[in-house]
Amino acid sequence: MRRTLSRALLLTAVFAGVVGLAACGKSSNTNTGNHANVNLQPNPGLILGISPKVGPAAGGTEVTITGNNFIGTPQVLFGTAAGTNVKVVNDKKITVTSPAGTKGAKVNVVLKSGDGPTSTLQGGFTYQ
Image (cartoon, rainbow, N blue to C red; front, top):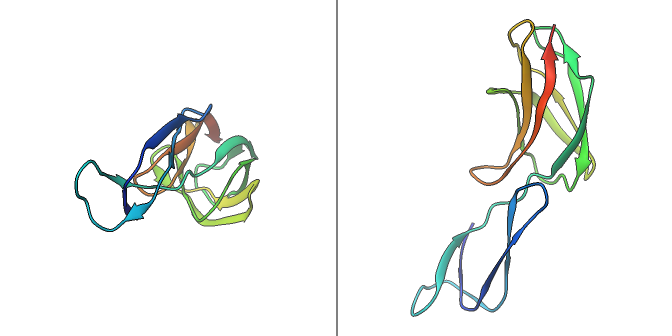
């Protein structure tokens, strides 16, 4: 969603390293004078844990991701491969089916919201 803001912008860094944007002032559909065009992307939430932490290289493991502030339907990546059947159960729980991977590989689990911010659990899943 593109918005044009007519007042001050306040950038705040979230402790997870994700930058959020809080806007103060009146919104407008035109850009005249000292206005900034801002592309607002939702924050995908913060990953705190994953269960199970291991699964077969063939994929197909139902994984539960726990954390905070889960909203919408983020993309879930296991390394660079997208998980399937992503379901945000509530603001603290997501379920996803793991994709196929390389046996023995320990991959990052990443929540991605469009082209916006991401949340990463380093080495969060291992393929057996």
